[in-house]
Length: 128
Image (cartoon, rainbow, N blue to C red; front, side):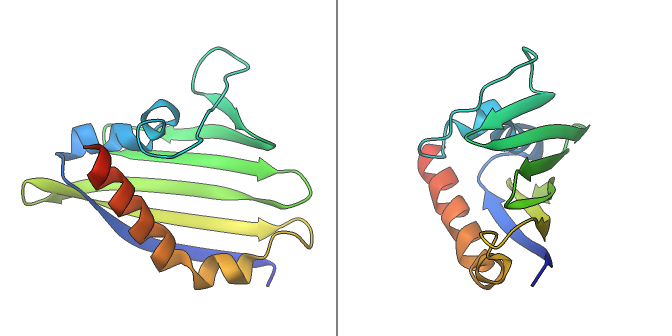
């Protein structure tokens, strides 16, 4: 499998304008163990996590979209759209990835996507 497209939902017990902040490089520090982005340009427009380079390509009140490249492994986009859901938020999270090498294992990523997002939901709930 050279390309995948995955989409799912994460419920967040915050209103959308607050929830979207959890999906920014700094916001993810609150709930992702070991998440430690660095900023070569001094802001969140471009950031690094390990060997992955991220570029913010869309930023609005309730949407974030990032392009990401892990050289020799994979490249693609990650999008998050937050919408009201009662007193909280439903965040629609999409990954569009292309394999750049044999270590990408996109089939395994796609097969575990629902569990991946369920983990996000648990971690976010625990931090807020």
